[in-house]
Length: 276
Image (cartoon, rainbow, N blue to C red; front, side, top):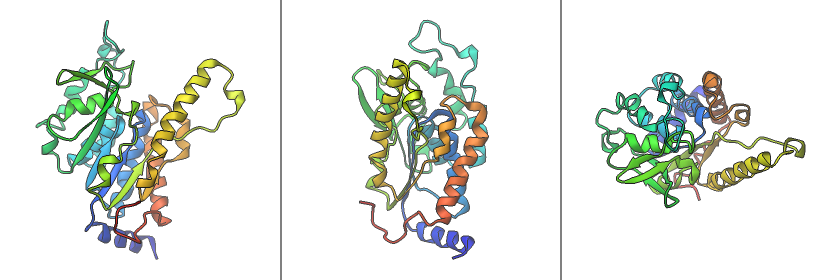
């Protein structure tokens, strides 16, 4: 089937479905999420439910609010994540996470999950008791900031007297809330493991860092089976969490990988039921 006709066919079928989109954390690599959204929309595929961690929470929230992918990309490139004026003094983080409230409030004037055009789920980690909390109701902006607050870099975010950091600490691929309401789920995971040899692991820090990355990846990849299609460009290993100067290249990786996956028919339409 010609790509144009196939995409139209896919889009028509999915219009009658609840389609979930789960977006992992990954800092600057989260720009790949925006590329995926562009490719899906070009194929006539519009997610109805969103769940995202960290940078995935930012992209997911903006998309759930009805912001066009091009504007999300522009926001992603211009948000002043490393403005030195925002350095926190004598706080448990280099950057004061509260200062990003104004950046987000322009897009979420009602500051409410209920005001969004699509259901959205955002996990954040309670840094005190070590539990993960899934936010989906009430105040919106603080959960977004909390989920994107990389531990040690950004200060914890206080919500109802409790302190939260990066949702990816415990749940970097939050597919769980999409399983029940969605007929199909597309996942985007932007933290592929880099291939290494023992020559790359000469120091104790390298061993510790590698072990942590394996642990996080294993937890996330164990949930891929809940998805009908997973986008995870291996080339993302060449980009860092804070490499904001490579946003355009990362965006293109997400777009090209998703477009290719759709062309190959990776989005399974053989059954409408939820994936096992």
